[in-house]
Image 1 (tube, each protein chain N blue to C red):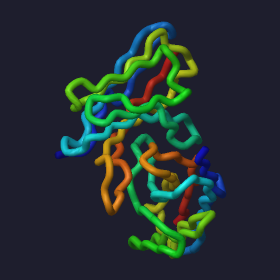
Image 2: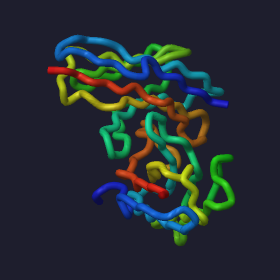
Image 3: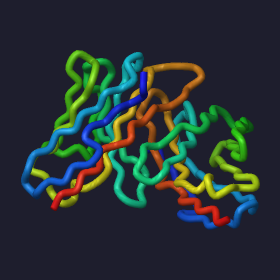
Image 4: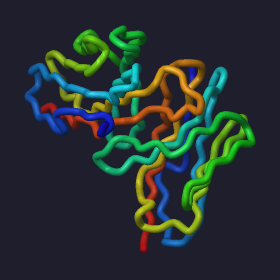
Length: 116
Length: 109
């Protein structure tokens, strides 16, 4: 297993267009998380899945954002009608649901979105 | 609501000049406090998990400590390759990690 994989690494889109990102987690991990990070800020939680069930969504996740994790494997994050304020690094992470010791999350390298 | 505050925002050190980074937190029932390292353009990389006050963890030139209100990341005799952003995060119960804004560390040769 090569860790958490995110594609694409970079995406430039025009305002108003739709974009979709993909995340392939570590195969043994049953939890998958999406975070957003802007310059000079820490990662902000967006949503997470346990297997295929979406268990929590942040207030940051407007109705233009939708995430799926079909069959509990890879996940996609779609942003509709992109706005310039959506420009950020979108990070995916995965973990086991409950482990001791707790190693936290394994993050991917992120998808950098630029809305022009 | 869980909160994490990191200080300073940025820190510039000469190679070999030891220092500490601070992470203050408020959380309802700490399950773990996490330190991550993040290099530019990359995702955070796990460093340590601390579970209870008094606990300490070490890795090479890094040492993390935990009290009931804050955690410190001590960097002893840093090298230029230690330059990165260091992120602190907390978890209460089974909720998603809550991150601070990070400390940008620059180590000058």
